[in-house]
Amino acid sequence: MTTTNQTDQDTELVIDGEAGLAAGGSAPSGGTVGTGQTGSPFKRFFSRLMREKLAMLSLIILVLLLLVAIFANVLMPYDPTDQDLTARNLPPHNAHLLGTDDLGRDQLSRLIIGTRITLMAPFIAVGVGVLIGVPLGLLAGYFAGWFDWLTSRIADALFAIPGIILAMAVVAVRGPSTVNAMIAVGVLFAPRLFRVMRGETMAVRTSMFVDAARTIGVSPVRVIRTHIVPNVAGSLIVQCTVLLGFGVLIEAALSFFGIGVQPPDASWGVVLRRTFENIHELPFQSLGPGIAITILILAFQFLGDGMRDSLGKEMRHAK
Image 1 (spheres, rainbow, N blue to C red):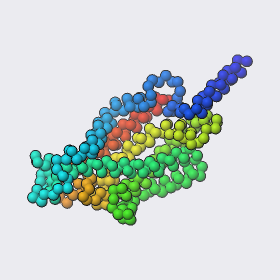
Image 2: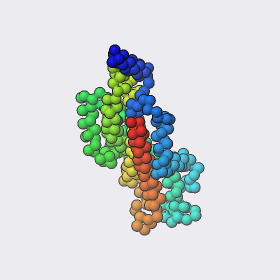
Image 3: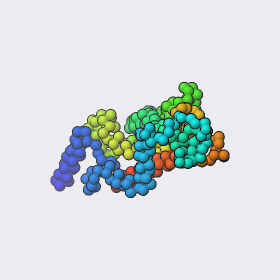
């Protein structure tokens, strides 16, 4: 009798848990319930991220650069398109803090206005990658079967194509444009995001709360939306942050080769390209854009690493 009563109680607990899932609730990350943890997972994650010094420094740098991009028109000391042939290739001094280029344009003003495109371009690429890779990864990881096999083979094929080569091909067909180039790069970011989403979805799909939701007849769309997506969102954000750094590098390379941003628009890659011909005689011209590109890439990378470490600690805490 004791065994029978205990079994009945366990059955009631399972049914109650399944009913809660059917009502639209999402299981906590990692499937942990009632472990005595205090605070929301987001608060714990952000608290750990705050202790990552490099990550927080990187976040501050990115916020400052975003403010520079927003208020560029106010911060620029000169019009970045104004040419003064009598002030060509001037070294840094009081009137021009970073000197001038071969057309007499103020380097600092061009860097400030170039912040807009330099920050915008990688977000276009990552946005395209998210739109393509994330839905396919979620579906492939959840349903598996022939759809998983087909999308995985396509992703493997795209991995074999260098990003800059595809961007050059797209620009050759559609003409030089930052948007065209970044869309091509975004297509190549999609397989990376696809793999991350596929792997995370396959791991969450085998969780007890997902099995319970399936058992009581919750639709696949609702399972993915309410149980899968919240548990894989952290990994997606980390991966996107890292890819933003690669996007900055690729945009700078394309603009340096003359197939990205076109004059009179400016990005940091364009500014760097203008200084390349005189790099031996006037090395100071390359320092501003070169250092700026390096700092931005490292900021995205360090922030991504800090988020990854904090997320890993949160997952271990959940277990």
